[in-house]
Image (cartoon, rainbow, N blue to C red; front, top):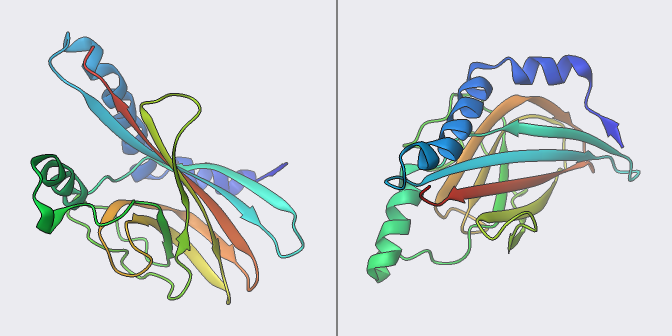
Length: 191
């Protein structure tokens, strides 16, 4: 499979958000071990594959490792306590894409500039690499040209709660093309 242009891969991997996201993912993996069982960790990761209208594909690989939102974390805790008014209200498997590269924040509740009408229903499953990895794969189809720079994972096909928002270097899409997004949330048990 063809890879994204080298210039795009360099530009994306040199972004401050990509670098700090990578560092955060490493901390989430190793802090549970280093804390001798007193901490757990979690890290999100987003991958993409561009699919042209003719069926050819370009693998973009890892777009970023950011940002699980406070809204999601709060709803997770409320879910455990049985607070029905803030229950999950469905599965976090809906993929949205947008055109604004404002930096991610834990306080995000939506994409900054979501492309209307393109949110895709993904699959919600445990990843084959481990029972501690939640995975959703969704293919967002585009009806016009756009410069896609943000992705969000939601629990609804419209509106809903935002689980994760990731900003990345621009992927220029054309009408009738699509991007297959793969989102993974890995939760590490106490060491």
